[in-house]
Image (cartoon, rainbow, N blue to C red):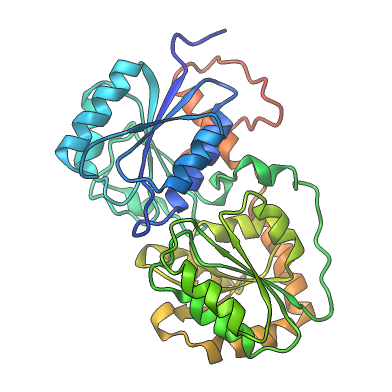
Length: 364
């Protein structure tokens, strides 16, 4: 059976101010949708690195000459979706609210809306996805009767490069020495710089510091690498992120979507809050102990990071327990569950022949 149209239109932005997390999870969804049809990314703001990444995956990028989240944006996205014959529109970003959803739905289009903390005052999308473990239906009481919620870590979207590590198991060393630092694709406050200074204070560690192509502090980080006695590897926009996570014993990370990638890889981490929209994840890590929460980035100094890193590195039992619990949270099938929910909304009898397809998605 074939659908009369199989195009997925994804409206998302990525810049030094908005970060890359929205883009990366949309890329994971696009990879999962590839088995169904084609994908077009509609962007108003996009770094060259992100555009290259998306085009390198074989997806089309359409640039919209609009201010993100405005009425002009609504009209341009709706017009593009209708002209292209999109079967679904996906919208991801805090600049998109209730009015944006209404504009898409008023055009008769199906809409999947990403949300992390209830930033819109009303929801009329067909599907709303919040992949945070603390996601609660009570956040979305103001929604249309037909709006379905996909909530929790069952719906964590992982890019395809992670899925080859499905059956890999981590070994926990007595003392952790290999440290992965990844604090978002842009990191405008240069929290990475603080962490790099912390590495100098810790004996016998091997650091790998990951930065995005949109990081404005790239030059200063390179200079730090030359100055510091503790050597570390500086990696820009890696395509082998799962491999870097597998090699590491501990991570130092922001409380964004990368936390769920690390959960899949069983990588225990020190967590720093970089933005208000990460508070749900940060509070979850703090409450459950599935991450060593260091606090708001402005309150975190190199001495604090170094002390926490040293203590965690020497606590093998704690790291091992955390690693095992993390692996239980994310099974790698979230993107296919989301695609399954989208196809159920189009044709309930659509055949399930995509390998590890999850039937019986739990919708609220």
